[in-house]
Length: 490
Image 1 (cartoon, rainbow, N blue to C red):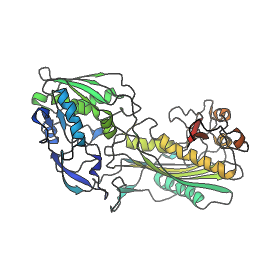
Image 2: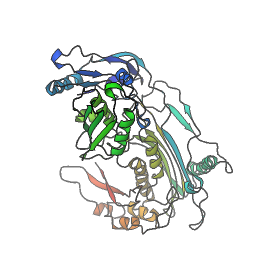
Image 3: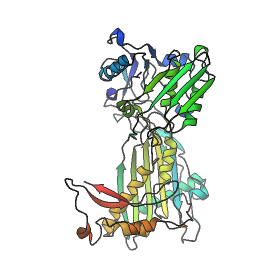
């Protein structure tokens, strides 16, 4: 079986999506037509209830603009695999299968979540923090103000986050704004001895590219009122409970009293199968397959088209480094993420991205905001790294820039600023166990920086222009372990 998706060319340059008036299969020869066509109105008639976590239309209703690229329009079911296989390729290149109406602006939807982390360390290493998330709490935007939509890209943010007015004696959010403003003033109006690196970074929407695209089997037995499924998922309990919520109000021939979910080895997942909406479509296929086992399986094209992605971010950051000591003094960053058309874990990913943004480094003054917006893009989820790869990489690149500006070795600069046991990170929590960060930096191979760089720099690999040019020290948000990582450049 196959489900037609919103084509990529459905987005006009002015950021408008077409209303979809349904599908037209009249060009298919009768032997190739599906045995069952399931549309949005069929799901409504069956009283299927989309779980809150996946809130939205499973199938785009006729006459409405799709919520996101890749949103299915219909579920088509065949009993003849050869016919299905042939039609899958025909529909993929068909120009008139999807009937389109007038262009419509993307739906205005509030951001999925926002967070601000501010930490001001005490005047000495033994002194308590002036302000920190552990002592005072992290804060969320006071409100989101709509942005006037003009001729801009369809994935442009539709709202702007507004934070509480700064007040040193006010609420936690007002105090965070006050101390955050101090950090930014320090970086916006630096003293002569403070080197400030100011950069903007963009990360892409990535597919996890696990080995086996998502697939599943389902069989609804009306006589036993049982729905049996075989699923490949990283979150089996959620998949089973979500399917139970989906079918909880179904009645008549579609009534389900028992759900049996067999969860198998998944051939890789990397977060792309964690709370994926795909098992809900497997369940829908089983319900409408007329007491017949049915298989729903993405091929690679469909997985790229509709599977969960890594969140793309735009990150604007400023890093302050003491020119005399080489110590990192302050860091301010604004993280703007794009969550796509379904919320999934976007709010949580934005939170973790902000919390991990200073990596393994001891920076006493930090202000980081993070907002993840809804967009017509393919939904993003909990892909491996969970926002940290996007947020930590810019700081590492800025440290390289700082080392270059100071004439310092980037490994030595990292070693001098790596958190030691007992020192506090951005959230003001500390790791008391022995810390291996500095040992990792010390044992890292020379990457060609410093006074002897030209002599020790490795030559390019045969037939390439690629060579190692730097190092980074990422930190796990769970274990806070660190290790050297080479950066390659062509």
